[in-house]
Image (cartoon, rainbow, N blue to C red; front, top):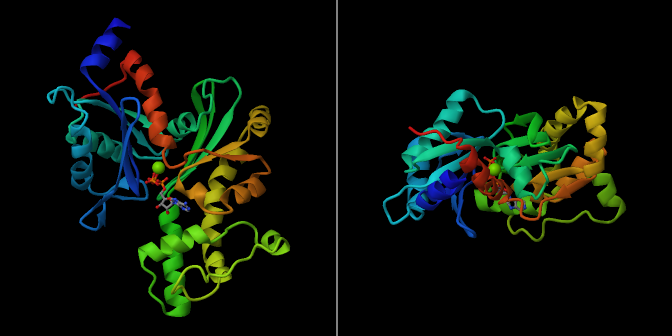
Length: 308
Ligand SMILES: Nc1ncnc2c1ncn2[C@@H]1O[C@H](COP(=O)(O)OP(=O)(O)OP(=O)(O)O)[C@@H](O)[C@H]1O
Ligand SMILES: [Mg+2]
């Protein structure tokens, strides 16, 4: 404990989420910085994997620099990785964080951080299930008594949904949709079940989004196979869950985090695919980094850091 108090006073600790769309850093009691994972118009990650360590370092170094104690003591960092990363991909995260100026790093699985950041009691003896739908990765885990019992991920997320919209506009309407308008369209479309929407008169036109040709049906159909791929991540974990654990998950419901859970109708589709109640995290975009931040004290006490 004395070691922890001494080290945490001398070494400020930070949590880092190197995401496909955003790099987020939290420190202290409230500080949170989010910067697009973008350098000179190029993304530093693809499908949750770092493709350009130098670009990540260029984004992360100034963020970590703010946390140096007395301007001379670099922080220790807990960094998150998707649950299916290869050792090479994990090393790239470690290297990027250390090169960005962290003194030590501890790597934790993203779904565990997402669960903690969503306010789940991960130490509970009753199982919880979380699905994080990000920009490039969809990650699912079952957690009980502080341990991940099962996890599964697929390299699919909001970036793929946007690309499908851009492709559809080009192919069926010979129209170029830029990234911003594809994002606006993604936020507008309701991917919930069409028959239910029609029944309740919820089907909308695209009049709200200027210059997007075609109707909502065209774009919703283009998203369908990707939505199914995203839902299959949770279904895969659910199908191989033992009945005793399954009962606990049914009781607690499935928790949904990440930017993808803000796509309209996504929670309904997950509920329909699994027949389990779905809860959406209050702040889904920040759940991972906030959860990683909450893990800092225990990581410091257990001294799980690794240096260069
Ligand atoms: N209100 C919203 N409605 C629909 N989609 C949204 C909304 N807000 C954000 N998103 C989507 O969420 C994406 C970002 O998600 P998130 O921040 O979880 O990704 P990430 O953590 O950077 O990526 P990953 O974890 O996959 O590496 C955005 O690019 C956007 O497409
Ligand atoms: Mg993420």
